[in-house]
Length: 253
Image (tube, rainbow, N blue to C red; front, side, top):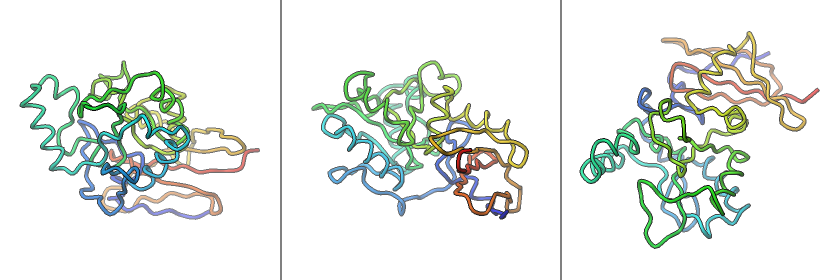
């Protein structure tokens, strides 16, 4: 066994951080980890998310018909977008489709808005139907760690209207688990609290591997410590809401 020590501030970092109306983004600038989503684009994503998105798009030749509309945004850019939407569209519309500064997933570098290539694309609500190449992308997204972040029927949970164009990188196996169970990121974090690390875990089978996922609570004023087997692959992500998600890969038996 070995002990993983997670500094308290790391609760705000990782692929699974929850950023919404209740939990603001806390890390600030992430420019050093950003790269363009493809060679001809100025849209940026966190490096790992960009690599997986590129692989997904290559598998379906997606950039021929799909445009990257918006990825990472600075706080200042999010403030400008929010203010402009208030002026142009009013408060009711803005509250549905535009997050307040520090409450937008776009500031994390883990979210991207996509739209069909057209002469004119609506920046706030790009066209991304459930048909053609967009449907193909949506069907394959989970295999590359992406989920549709704001699905229809979950508006009361996410606090955002249905946005079929907005995708969030959460990584494996979490995208598959969320999709199979029909959970938003908010619901997924609540779900994982049923599996406290060291007591029980949620087991997900992928091919010849068993993947164990569990929840660990952050420790106020001190590192949080978690014991795992010393020779297996693992990952830890903060949830931005007082805890961590631990994922351990083991050979299937």
